[in-house]
Length: 142
Image (cartoon, rainbow, N blue to C red; front, side, top):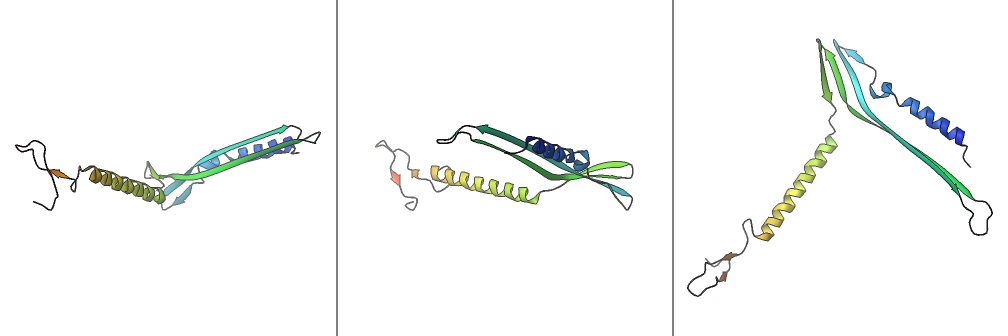
């Protein structure tokens, strides 16, 4: 069985590491500019336990737990010349993925419009003449 006190102590130690010092990195000074890196930190955890005798056993118990920590760079503050500017970190993978999603969506919409006959290539009808209904004709027979 897990020692609950040791587990809680481990979680406390990890949570102490998630601090403002981890979100804002150490300032970097160069060429009259100060750069302060910024990151997004997220953490979560959980634990549980229970006991229920299984068939043929008198005492049975179980417990478990888990913890996760994530960090993502957001950008930097650039301080110099009496001004503070924000420079976001650009995730090129997200930009590429977004472009691919837009392209696939556009292709699917164009395909649906072509199938529905709203954009070139649809069937055409000759206007109704003196006999009533229009007559279907092939796009080649003009």
